[in-house]
Length: 195
Image (cartoon, rainbow, N blue to C red; front, side, top):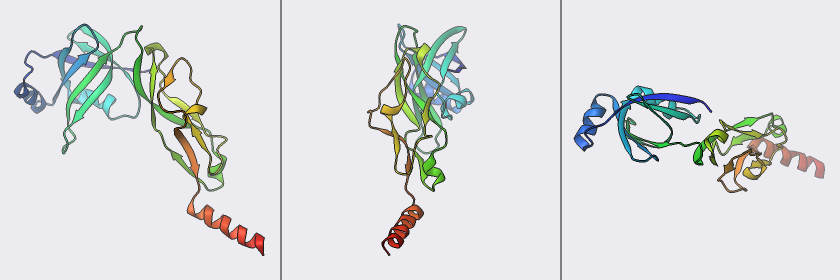
């Protein structure tokens, strides 16, 4: 999985006013959890775009004044109106501890049902996954090459290697839905068959 470096700075003042001042300077206050102690930091808002505004999952190399922490994005808070990032939480990652991440699903192949006029619906764009960091996949491939109209691929159909998907086995990930035109066509062919 790709690692993105984020450069940050230790925070000395932790009050609300200090956080407000940081945001006014286009800095985002944050907290790093999971290690021996919580680490309070701030980072330029521009550096967070590559990990926040993307469907991809990433590991983060957080560089706080020369000290490197391997971590993942845990939580993010946005302003309800302006959508500006208000606060960010990272979780420190250790090779011997399993972590949970939301991993994007990628549809692979051409569904025969779509060729017949069905509508391909990508129901679960991300799935919760638990694994050791070295086993965490970049993406989960979903084979749709056998899906006909009305058929679906569920979580139980997905092949996993050294990781566990936390969604229920019956959860639909992708399906080929019947369109109105297809339904109308099948009704017409039924009528003509009866004549």
